[in-house]
Amino acid sequence: MDYKDEMRKLIDIIKQQSFTAPLAQTLDDLNSLTTATSDLSDRINIRVSKSLQPKDKQASKSINKKGVKKPKPFPSVTPPPIPKSNNTPQQKADKLNGKLSKRK
Image 1 (cartoon, rainbow, N blue to C red):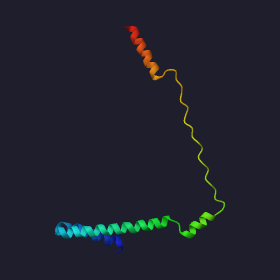
Image 2 (image 1 turned 90 degrees about the vertical axis):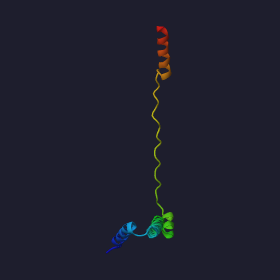
Image 3 (image 1 turned 90 degrees about the horizontal axis):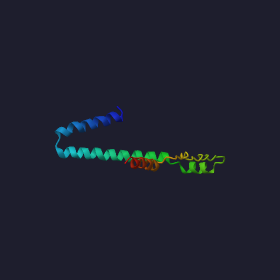
């Protein structure tokens, strides 16, 4: 039996006992489970951070390497030209207002 099966069994026991055990015991079980989960999460975070940070010897070797090419910068992107129109919204509104005033 691997640890995952044992962990699942313990969680199932806590779930089953939560209905029948006294409330104080259920809260204590929940607190123990929460503490264990927090400890496990902290340990995993430490392992991940150690694996992401290079060792001191590896870091100094990578800095001293020659022939490392710098990446080329992205070409600049220019915005598309703004089409110049003779009929701006304001000019259209003026034309409509002019037509309306002529009708009266």
